[in-house]
Length: 431
Image 1 (cartoon, rainbow, N blue to C red):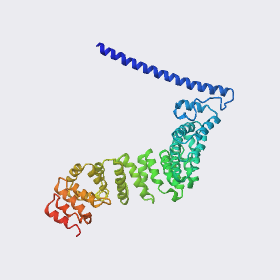
Image 2: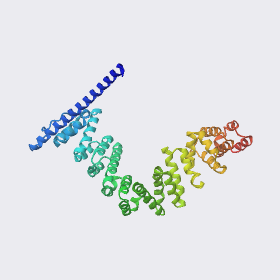
Image 3: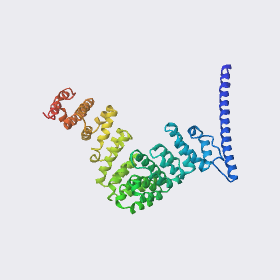
Image 4: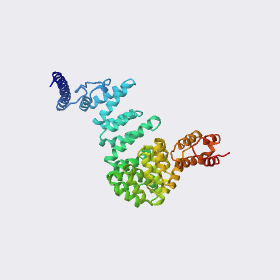
């Protein structure tokens, strides 16, 4: 080993050892602080009196957000209720600004874990502070949801506070229904108007079905039909988490029910996200009159997600009979052409003539285009290397949007298509 390398090893070793000493020293100091806090608290408890001054806080309202979380938690946990309330009053009295917001945020995050009931009452003081409300609910133990739910509903339901209230209540229902869905459902029923029942019942049912689909289904069955609307989709989604096969079997067996049309459309989206192959098998088991709607729903929804890629969505759709895919495939075709026109043109050129005709129709199926958009689409179609495909794409665009091209006849004269096709296209444009 060279002398230079030996020196490097010594330097690096010294740095590592110093870092280790600093870490150990920090841990020891942290343990001593927490130990001292607990010792004071234990001594106060043995003497039978825990007063506001029996445990002196080492922070105040102005620096609470900068203190170590472990220190804050231990000190507040062993403080009296009067001390905690005094701290809250000091935070409330602080001037408005970032410092007050940080102090309030930190205090509430701590207190909801230490004294959930007090935090529930404190929520009424911050109706417009959506971030802190979310933090309180997220940090609260699940057992506190029963206390938090009615307090959230006391928040104002107008203006900016309405959004904060709605988001906080959604957090409560999500968390509560995962541990006690029956109680959460009963609360929604008993507070139908105040809780905006339809907006949150789906969350409760989905979480309930993931644990006990039979009970969730029984609860839905007891509801007034007007209240049970659209809950079947949530039931199937939750049930799918627990038992895929059973959920799909139930959906197929009840496909004739009045509420199955919309439920199966949304349920198919859930299946598709987990397994496109399972979704295809599920759709093939549905009645013919539902298959079209379900396929169209999937093609429309997954388009916005970007998953799967347009090429994969197009190929998945074409596993069905043409009558099911020829309309919804436009979503995939247009996105594919936008992302990678060369790849799209190469794929489309290899399709059978009859299938290629349907793809050309889908290519021209644009939503509310402007004249300049049509010019752009025609220019893109003109770059297709395959002459037959190129003429089909342009023909469909001009045939559908010819009325927008009255002043653009010269555009067609510049296209790389045959004279016969040029003449045919000109006849499609109104004079």
